Length: 376
Image (cartoon, rainbow, N blue to C red; front, side, top):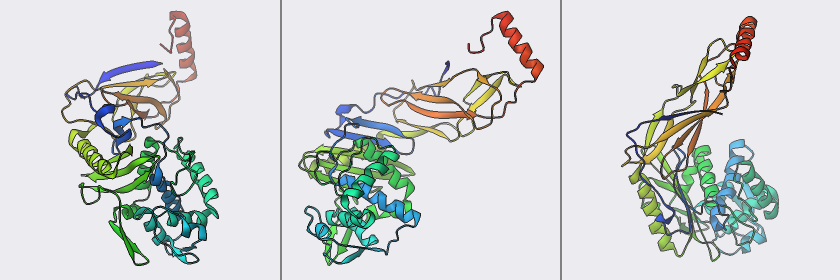
């Protein structure tokens, strides 16, 4: 393993940022979606009952089918007796009636309707049980490895769990992949069957830039929130769970979102295509190949930062020719106090042809005679 270590922007010191005890929430994670930097986390990988926050997966299943053209907003689903009699939060759908996908989505997103969630599940998969199996399978395909979803509503079940980190990933998928539908999460109220209900998200209209996503509460889970806010092109994702009451949820979520925007900023480090390091090439027409990122590398750091940010480039070397431009060869690893290490792939910045036959013979003889180790 060849290791090259260098310091980027020595003027940026990341003082200790978020510690686990900086929130009263038993489980929490705050992520800068622009850079992927975790600003705060506390027991974020523990699978927990998510309550209605798991309805985000129910909504995603619909969004994917809308995007694929399998469903349309004006398509209707029938309301079963099971859906109609479901307890908890309700959209107040009527048994044996048909409800449009558009109304059902708002019933789930704005009103957190358990009845609307079951109508969706039965309409897509035939039964809530089959839908829950499909939800879990799709969650695993998306990399949400902690997800075990037993129903479409978040109704208490000992095996119905997902971690705060995976809820944050799920929220990011919804925001980035379905912008045409995400705006529903910012709707403040929705009226169905002459019953108007307000969105339970405590950040809407209170925190600038807040535009989603979903609250949750059961006796087993406590009070939780999966939230997102965007300011000046920078988006944060927050997940909290296990708070004691709705007031604590509202106050703590507002405090953490404001803290994230106030204390951290996104700093550009390397531009797309800029040479970060050069890797040695064995038996190539040239000795080295530039290593470049395929996107701008940006890192979220505390605004009071001064120095100490370090980066390392790791690759297995030397690289054996031929090399194709765009071939992934290395990883750029960024480290700083108080944040998790962040890694970005690096690619060959140019083609490197293989050395001619006699040149290769000469290089191998030189290695044998002088004890040259191409991996050194």
